[in-house]
Image (cartoon, rainbow, N blue to C red; front, side):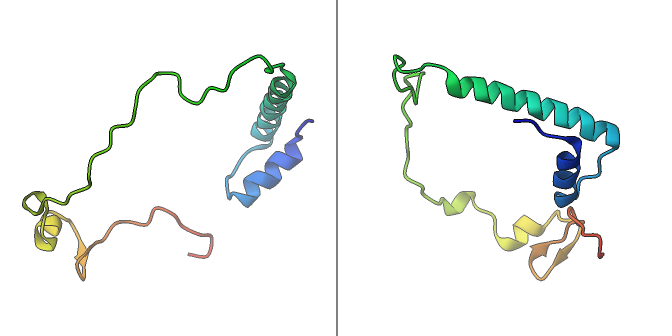
Amino acid sequence: MSVNNSQVKHIAELANIPITEEESVKIAEAFSETLIVVDRLKKADVSKVGVTHQVTGFKNILREDVVKQEQSFTQKEALANAKTTYKGYFVVPYVLQSKDT
C-alpha cells in the first residue's frame, strides 16, 4: 500500500493544514515507508512470544481522592492575578480560529 501526494494534500486540506507541493511529496513518501514497516510487522511470527502488557513489574498505587479545603482557592483568589476576567472566568486569547472569523 502506498500513499500519494494528492491524498496527503486532501488530508491536509481536511485538517486545515497548509502544506506545499514539496512537503506533500515528502510526507507521502514517509507515510508509504511507514506503511511498509507496519505491513512487515503484521507478518512477523509472534506465535511463541508471550503476551506482554506490562514489563516493569510496577503496580499502580491508588489513593482516595480527597478534597482538602484548606489547600483550595476561592473563586476570588483564583482570579486575583488574572489579566482579564468576565463573570468569574478567565479571559484568554483565541487559540483556534476558523476561516470565517
